[in-house]
Amino acid sequence: MKNYQRLEGMVAASFTPMTLAGDLNLDAIASYADLMAKSGVTGVFVCGTTGEATSLTVEERKKVLVRWVEETEGRFKVIAHVGSNCQLDAIELARHAMENGAWGIGAIAPSFFKPATVAELIRFFKPIAAAAPEIPFYYYNMPAMTGVDLSVAHFLKEGKKEIPNLAGTKFTHNNLMEMAQCLNLDNGTFEVLHGYDEILTCGLALGAKAGVGSTYNYIPSVYAGIFESMKKNDLVTARALQKKSVEVVEVIIKYGGGVRGGKAIMNLIGVECGDCRSPIASFTNEEYNSLKEDLNKIGFFEIK
Image (cartoon, rainbow, N blue to C red; front, side, top):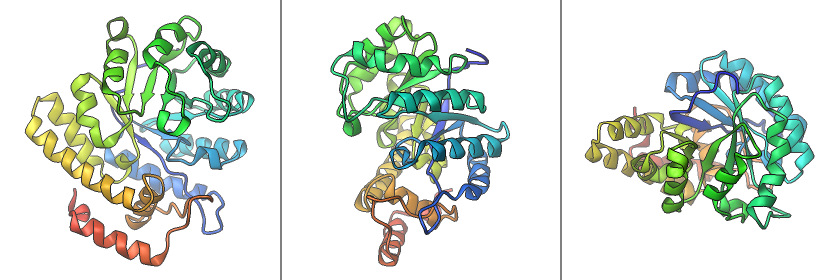
């Protein structure tokens, strides 16, 4: 792998900006990228769950990635999510990502026809990772969405034998014992990117060095503070900041979760992300007013 360095700090799971008509709003990525650069993120994870990958066509995903790479201008890393239920589409997206300047790629497990064993999961991912051999590949583990709950540690150990650029896992699961197993595997060979924002302190306590999160987009100072305080073993500060994170997550859950509620928050802070694609319902004016009230109650707009 060329220029590979282990990730540290915040990787924002980016939203995909849309117009009111539901088309891509690629021009909005310019100001979005500027905001991410100012926030101090290490990178962005493009067209993942937060980016509504499964609601986009292959060509749309390519366009979104290319614009992110262009607008980033080397200020932070771009990791392309290339996962798909169609292996051939994922291979095409992986090849395109490497050829167009992505720093790395990640792929979620197929969720319709599901792999029943680790061997089947490796067989599915091997040609995808091989299509982008010069950049790191991460297994995006998210059983809550895919229904695939195979041993990640076993996948990493066996997968590395057949996938040379397997760097680690984006671990979006609250099974902290399994996370520890991945972190401790082969004396820390693999990266474990923490995926649940509301329990980041737990992952860092176990040894994670980087996280991928949607709420990093709009309260990055909270998470930057968590990373810094955990480095200093300042648990009092880390807990206080995690409490703020939990309060924000409680609000977005009320409004449909991290994609729908989070996208609405992006619009409120001035990043034109539009609505989500169907089947996720559009935000109403009444909901925006209610969301503002709920965010004011927890001091969201005072977070610096």
